[in-house]
Length: 125
Image (cartoon, rainbow, N blue to C red; front, side, top):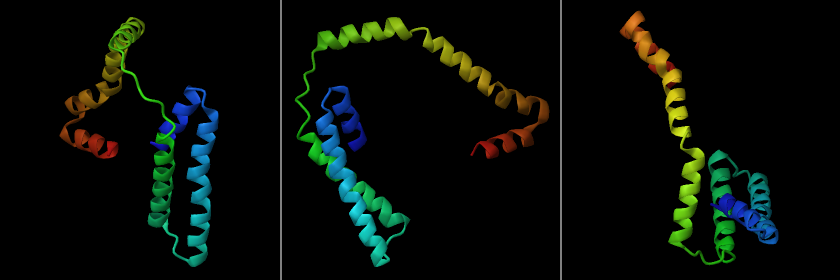
């Protein structure tokens, strides 16, 4: 969420807020990680907890700079129409890509048997 807010600030030309949000998140993260390393308490779990905590801190601070959102249904409708006109051909393309990518997985058990289907599924996981 903190990364989303940073991108939001850049998209709305609020680069100072993006810099301040990053500074609150990452400049607090680095000293905490260094202190925990010096204390010998740093492992992967505590590192992730520190990273998530400082990101939550940056996210909470960033929410104060977000301007109120205005939902104008006429704009949403117009933008949805424009997106549909541009991307309606992507539905058939996505279906064709999925079919061509999964055709071997569907056809292999027919020719090679159930063991091949099991091997394919196991290798996917």
